[in-house]
Amino acid sequence: MDDNTLAHMLTALDRTESVLRLVGPGRHPVELDNALKVAQGQLDALRGILAVAAQEAEVKRRTLVMALPVLAISPMALERMAAAHRTDSSLLDAYEEVITKASLSYHSADMAELYRVMGPHVARLVERMRSPMPETDRRRLARIAAETAILTGWNALIIGQETWARAHYRFAEAAALESGSGDLRALAIEARANLMSNVFYGRWEPSPRALSALEGAATALDGSAPPIARQWVLSRLAHEMALAGDDRFLDVVDEARALDRAPDEEPTGLHVPGGYWASGNRLNDIEAVGLAMTDRADLGEVMMMAEREATPDTLPRRHVGIGTILAHVHASQGEPGEAARVALDALLIAKDRSSKLDVQRIQGVHHRLAQWDTKAVAELGDALAH
Image (cartoon, rainbow, N blue to C red; front, top):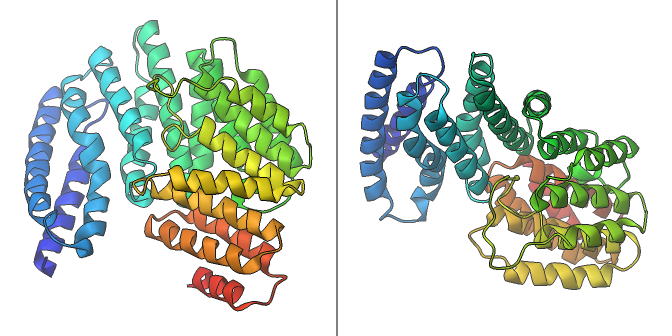
């Protein structure tokens, strides 16, 4: 692909994004119709270019990845968004499609590019929440807004934008309260607790304030909370308990694991960051970390090696998480060379996906390894510095 084609693709993406920003509350139907036509034309042109580019080699991969969030989220929802000048069921259906597409993008999309789509989308929801509408629509919109803001807050955290994340979580908690949803309020509290957590950022030390907030999130879960919400909150509570040296974290893991869905059951309803890694896989992560903290790292290694073997290559960010935990497990076993090697592999993927949070967590691994003066640890430090 020559430079002109690349430039044309990026220009098409920019134009498409600018048109999508026009689609929001308060626009006249004629404006929306015109914006839709322009956006559809741009997307059609972009699809044509991508169809040719997709036949070429790995050099083109990153440009394609940059396009994925727009192509995945916008076309399905755009027509209905443009048609629904009022807040009605078709607009709310379109907003729910965006949640689905965004959640399923967490393990494959470039996170900075995903946020370029989702950040403005949350801003439109904030504005839409101020509009008059029937109470039933308002409660549904509030739930959609809360869930979207939680997902987007995670997206902001992953790319290293804590201020944006905090604002999204603040809006999410208010919207969840308006929706009457205890499970979403619990998830919003849990998300905010991450901002206070050392372990969340990869530091190997307890966080009393985060632990207290997560206990509050678990209390906020009501009887109607779906298993996936309860599992997600309990998994983070167990994580903080393990880092605090509380052996009862295994009881919390067991409680969450008892809620696991059947292997052939399709996940429905509430979305959580990263698709649906809140259940068995994530709980294995938490248990492995806890075992490493309580001098049983050999058992944690067996668990995480099995996770790595079972995880497909199509989930690169999942591999980063597994590699980071494995590195901590090796560090707990006094194996700095293997820890540094595994962490370096994870670092290369994290940088490729614009995941600053994952890079920060790997810095936590390097901080633990700094007591060993080895070539592998030095190489990991050099890679983190560049």
